[in-house]
Image 1: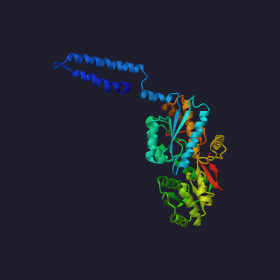
Image 2: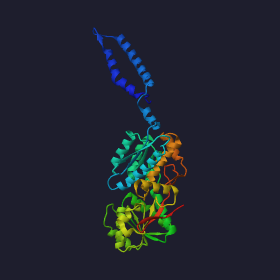
Image 3: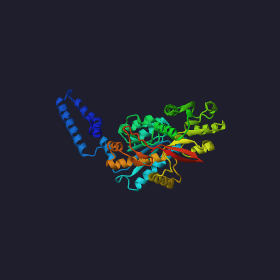
Image 4: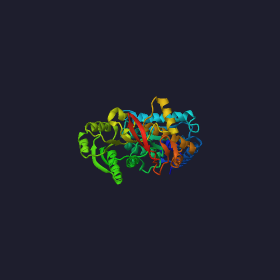
Length: 424
């Protein structure tokens, strides 16, 4: 049974009871004073009753106060866990910028029912143990109302296990591994399409819009890369096309001559690069040097400016999936792009900032609709959302908290990212 007044009871048990009970064994003239013991026992009982009564009249500090904080007049604390240093800092800081823009806009309009939002952004260094430590601190010490994170799917999966213990609404705007939303947790919401969704969109685009019938695949030797090889190959061949070759490479690899020579010998009419831009741009360069001039395809790793900076002309005309296109003719998208540019002096060219911006708004709007920041009620509102229009598209969360946001097909044209297709 839950103890109603843990603070006062503990104080009594630890300090008063031992002192009084020691009196039970006072001896006078070598004889135990049984009557005296009986009297002391009655005093102990009376003191216990008084302790409870006094506790009820005072404002106790304990679980009840912690619970009431969710509906206090203080700020709504939004915790953001992402990489803000090291190799992935570019993407983590884009997440932070998107979140801060949303927080500032909401606060300028008076907050949520008079309560301001406060962003708590911390660096997890893309380190699993650090990510857990930061999330645990936010949940236990900061008593956050909402959580957003992270860059890595594996870290995200671990962290949402922590936030789930307090049913804290948790948003996943960046990590796309399918199993993030396969956990069955009731408090997790991914407002971006998962990996298998972008693969399906790419296959459908090629089958509908491109003539390529024989494709070679070069993929990073990770769960991410192997998953793409498996799903893409199955769907591509089911559509009547052929995979000529499947080659794997290691993350951090610099020389791809061996894999590319085998690909060239298989005589494909197109090549799919299933990996991130650090290796992908090098693959594109070395492919051109070997005389592989076939159409190149890839996925979300080729978003933004980095592909052009690393790959130069070798990535020109490359076609890839994208979650966000800043030139999209959508009022909400253009409003976000203009506001972001005004605040930070740059055009947001990838989904990292846009999806995180949306996550803050999704939480704030849910609190407003619920009329409270109580996690149970906020989660109920989020699960009942239907076609909520956001920068990333119309949001409806399924039973696992997964949204089917739009996936764009983009092409690098003369050094610029251009959206060329998306399914209606």
